[in-house]
Image (cartoon, rainbow, N blue to C red; front, side, top):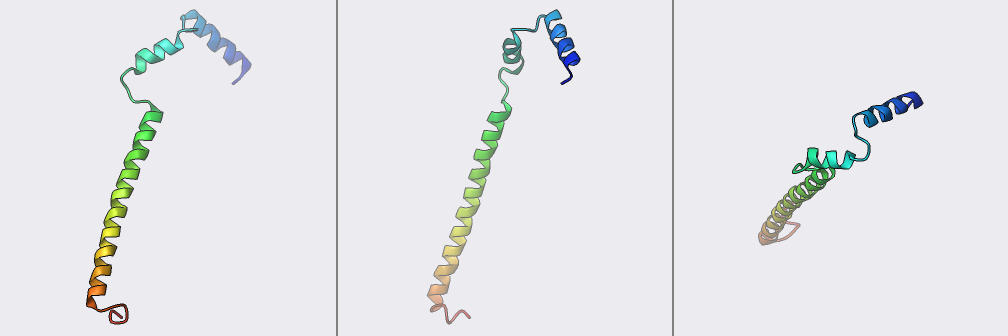
Length: 79
């Protein structure tokens, strides 16, 4: 950031009384809303859950196919 712009922004913040209470303003503005980090964590958990369900289904399908193959008499008879 250019030094002059930084001075102007600090002056503007001081003019409007924003120095020192930025955390209070943020807490008022975002209270009750999900933060970006909370949203990312929730999405990771949901993604893991979806992938786990998919892997469980694939594993069950493989198990069913393997059981059917064994019931037919072995590997050499399925070729």
